[in-house]
Image 1 (cartoon, rainbow, N blue to C red):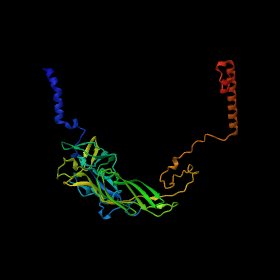
Image 2 (tube, helix red, strand yellow):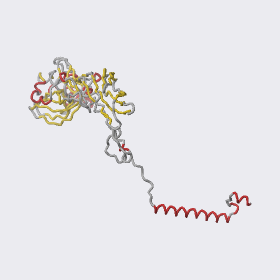
Image 3 (spheres, rainbow, N blue to C red):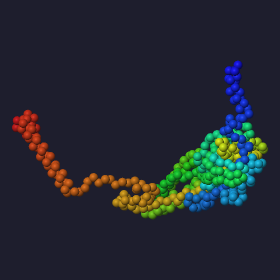
Image 4 (spheres, rainbow, N blue to C red):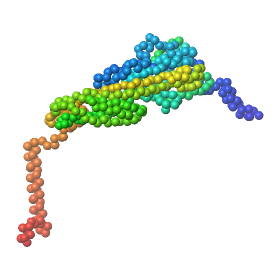
Length: 417
């Protein structure tokens, strides 16, 4: 009887704790709805590129299409109270959550918080995409590196929630004192320019007075770019680019020039009328807290992930749009330099020579000098040579005198026999 009770007792003990004290058994994930930390993130403009259509390596765009607030203005206008409501559970859409910028613009991502009790904040994770990341990611429009696809597990009440997709994690290790609020700059990122000029070459023909141009342009993105305009000194071409396509432009320009002068071919202008929008958050219905696509940020402390404010109602949020733009190449020039054969090896300036735009001259090496005109050495070699020939002749005659049958005979010797 007692043995049966002893066998049942451990099972009863386990059932009792699972029923009445589950939080001590499953303490790895805590309830996000009960924490004293209010949190969200915001997007702002760090800086814009110089809007210049004529200068080399510049970019131009429509300034009236720019949308967003500058980071320098945030501290004077925004704090956590301007971004959330409903006791910090709702992220207000339309406030620091959207940007429209040209390539080469810099974007700031800022974390906003307010806490009632002390919190030692270890990590922050910001979504860069929805759970289904095949629909897009902010990493397609800004140069975010080090992102991951790790699942985040959190809880709302007694319901476990899972956040998938692309995210960026930041190590903080910062103590947030009780009854405080503030913001932390998480990172600064550049809006990606999908088209790049990777190389070019200039070959003049002095007889026909034309210049041969070869330019390589690459689409570094996964998008289809249509109606890309290319213009250079009267040469015009419009074409479409496939994702990651590399295209070689080859053409000739009429140019009057002399053999002993530099040739300035101005700059290449490329027009990209395409635009791209990526969003990382999709709002949920009012008072609905179980859709993780609507969570604006996650923080990690006390060995658990906690969700930040939810975007409500059902709108796309945290969106960045790349605007249409034009950009110029660096100055395209043919540099003439007259260099004699004697000083080619000694040229260490890494400069252009005869129109060559790379340091090929630095790669030339002088062959080792294996012979020196030394009279004493020549005399020694001559003495050694005479001695060797003399020794050979003496040895041969001694051998023939002892072995007549093996004597080496010339034609006259044979006749005498």
